[in-house]
Image (cartoon, rainbow, N blue to C red; front, side):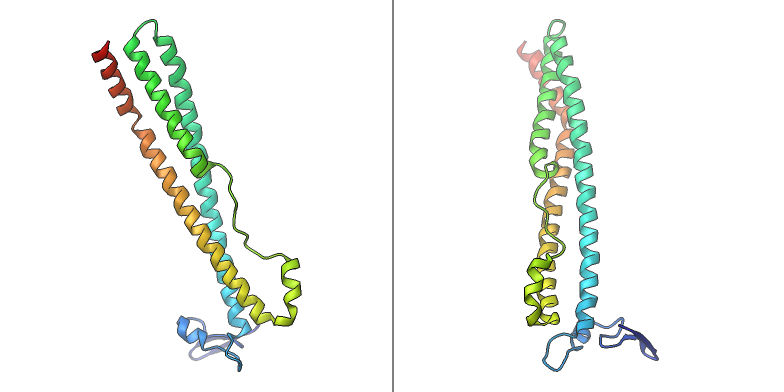
Length: 193
């Protein structure tokens, strides 16, 4: 693939002009009406960049979910022995601490399957065993099919990233409500006791 400078901008030999609209780029067809190979390769490069960006986002979301899970374990783990130790001194304070620990562990139990645990991950590329038998179809058609597969993987990854980031944000809000849970449990224990 080579580039050529013209008065109207850089063009790829056999492909669309840089900076063209999608409709203009789709006009870069061969005689049989299929998109030119250079255009398909350009789209493939864009898809690779999009996939890389989505995977980086997935990794960041997973890291944030793991950090939040660690904080929830630490908070619940600290409140639980405090609540048990406070039973002898102040029953209301003990019940409030145990309620806070239970709340944090409940948030953790909700978060784990939604954002922390490993799940199937869409493949970014097809395996040679699947592609080699298709050589008679022609490179452009195989590449076209692979781009459709890549789009499906990107759509799935976008959906998963949205679901996981929403779960992390909801768990953060629920964890931030632990003072309300503690205060409500304390007031209820004092009122009942």
